[in-house]
Image 1 (cartoon, rainbow, N blue to C red):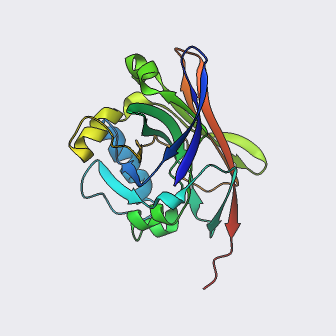
Image 2 (cartoon, rainbow, N blue to C red; image 1 turned 90 degrees about the horizontal axis):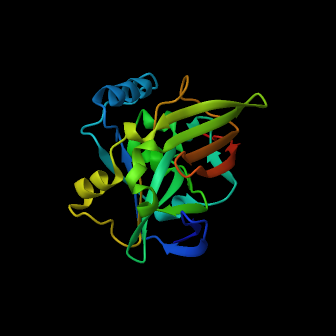
Length: 228
C-alpha cells in the first residue's frame, strides 16, 4: 500500500514523497484527561457501544482501507467521520498528517474493531515534519465540519493537548520510542459538537496557530443501500 504526500517544511519548502504502508493502527480512547475520555465513552454509550476494556486501545486496520480520494462509499446510512492526527515514518523521520477514522456507528454497538474495519479511512495529502511542530505540539487544533441539509456546520473543535502525545502512544504500543517504518497510526479524536451523526460531506483540519498553516481534507460520502 502506498500513500502520497506533499511534505511541507516550516520554511515553506515542499517535497513530494511516497510512503509504503504495511501496518495501520487506530489508537482509540486516547485522551489525556480521564474525564474527557469518559465523556466520549458516554457519547458512544448512547449509541449502544460497550465500554472499552482498557484505555488507550489499539485497533489493527487493513492497509487497503486507507484512501486519499475526495469521495468514499459506505454501506448504509450509519457511519460518520472523526478527525485524527496521523503519524508515520519517512526516511527515519517522524511525520504528521491527518486522517478520518470513519466508523460504522450501527456496527460499533456490536464490535468497535469491526465497525472501524468496514469503513475506509480518508487521509489528507499534506504532511509536516514532527520536528517542526514538536516544541509547540499542544497548540495544534483538530477541527471538523459536516454538511447537513446543504449547510456546513461545525462538528469538532479541540486542542490536541486533550489527547495523549503521539510519542507516548507509540511507546505504549510498540515498546520503543520510534514508530516502525511502513507503519501509520492515528492518535485519537476530540469530542463532537452535538451528537455523533452521519453527513453527506466531512471536512477535517489540523491547524498550527504558531506557524499559521493547516492540513485540510474534504471528502463526500455516498451511502450505498443496505440489502438484507
